[in-house]
Length: 76
Image (cartoon, rainbow, N blue to C red; front, side, top):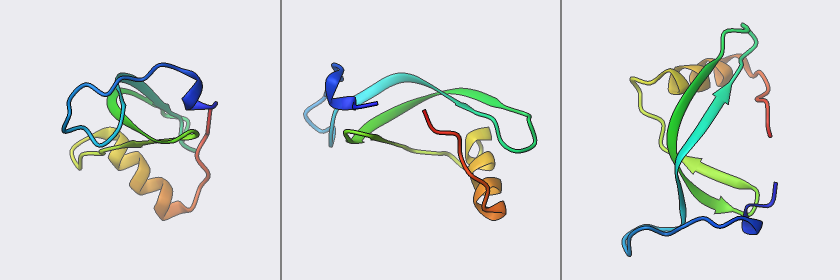
C-alpha cells in the first residue's frame, strides 16, 4: 500500500512525521497464536510505518521470538 495516497495527520509541531494514532496491528506467528493491539505508528516512508514496541507488550515478545527464529512476517 502506498501510504502517501491516504490522509495521515501530523498532530503536534514536535512530531517527527505524520502518525496513524489508533492503528491496529495484527500478527500471526508460526505458532498460530495471534495478537491484535493498538499502536501509534509514524509514517516512515510511502510503504513503511515505524512503531515503538514496549518490552512488556505482546507484540514486542512476538517480534523478539520471530527474529530469534528468523521466521518471516506477514506483510499487508
